[in-house]
Length: 145
Image (cartoon, rainbow, N blue to C red; front, side, top):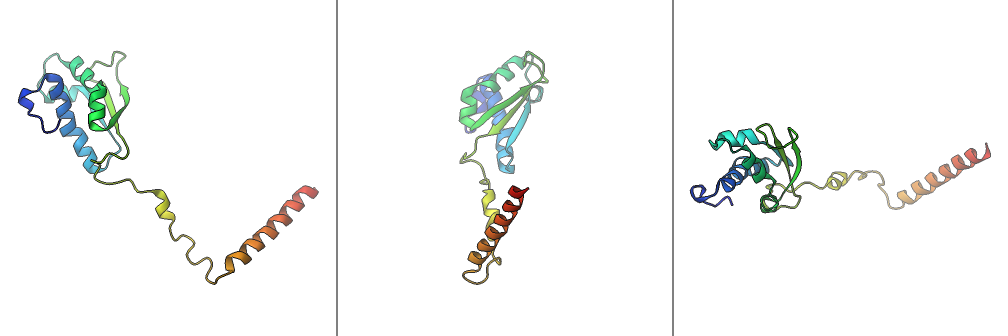
């Protein structure tokens, strides 16, 4: 929807377009995993009058979530969830092509961790044999008690 002309959009579409352009896209560029939107901030920014329920219901639409590859992970505020203080937290779906940075796989950080541990071929075999012998002795002592 980011390419849509805001002048011909419905008020609901304007809300979703505003959130996409001013909240979701910048958060993606920063590499954030989630972003929180306050209904009153959107209502005020768009110059709407008495349209808070429209703002809240526009942000709850599954179509909006799917189009922007987000999940509505939390809605907080008053019981009705139709207030200027209602907070909508959107979590970005992993693997979204629009993410600027791919999340780094933590296993890459383990690469080379044991680089100098076994310098000569066969060192690891001797080390494993020694560990097994020590483990067997320790187990035998525990069972003899």
